[in-house]
Image (cartoon, rainbow, N blue to C red):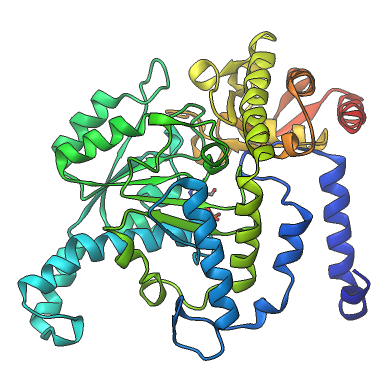
Length: 452
Ligand code: PLP
């Protein structure tokens, strides 16, 4: 920090403050974690300075021998960790991984057959008219993903996202009664919509998914099954999700982030079958530019950590802790979407406290509990104010929290929310944003959180 301070002291100060804030609060954001010192330190090296567009052994720049070593090791660890045929570790983030995977699938399913039909080996041989037809073919494709309010991600075909613009999109939701995925309804929708790609995976669905069933449905309609395991990659790596709950043996393409439950550096990666590997391997130049070599190195370190037996213990504890948190809420009368959890996250419906998600999120933040507001299925308050709070256990489990600590976390949260009241707008109506916490509650909660 002294080195940074000698150049820009405000950045050194903000960095110090970030550490202090993260230490003083309860980090319950389901997509966050604490990477190990080895992973963090690997990101701050000279690999940051190196350009290496292309792929291992086939670069558009000279002098990439050490990047080749790093990328090969990271990909090897990823293949071994997840039992995948092929791994691509260049995507800078989860969104990059998804965009790369979409184009790779389009290249494999649409562009390849089109080139064959036109009897040409590569795009340069296409006439302008052929190009027009190919563009139309690509733009005609259909994507079926999980809706945002059921727990899907923006990149799964949400209209304002590029995935909702580059495809004709349709979305599947959850059963309105149970909040659970309804595979029969999904099958019926897939049969009617005939998608090229079915996306499985989620950001805010507190249950496990049966990927064998997902693959069955994809096969029935001739779709490629892409699974975005960004949130639960740590539970797959840690062998908590096995058999039909492990997407790798069932999906054609799996995308992920490395920084959530997997506890690595901020980044993305893709796993694929041999069949899809050549298309994914063209991520650069198809979608990506120069890879972040320092982050690929840190991915290798984090994957190596996740191969250790201690990571399996950690992943199981993440799931056990989520159960304890859910039970802590339920026994205190709170309402959970789907009535519980069997992964790393809990979705608390805060309407029974008379609050919006925005008010609950703010009141908890004032009390040293960091969460994020989240839509619940068919949310009456929309995506901005929302009616839910999403809570995840990966970060605090890294800090060593067990079931008892998570029961206490539930107690603290219920206490804050039941002592928070919604405010009023200037016109005197009910506000969806302002709120008041009973005197002393925020400070007492902060003190209790610091003791944990
Ligand atoms: N996919 C899922 C399921 C996610 O939850 C997220 C992030 O929240 C992403 C992709 C995007 O990851 P990133 O923020 O690294 O782009």
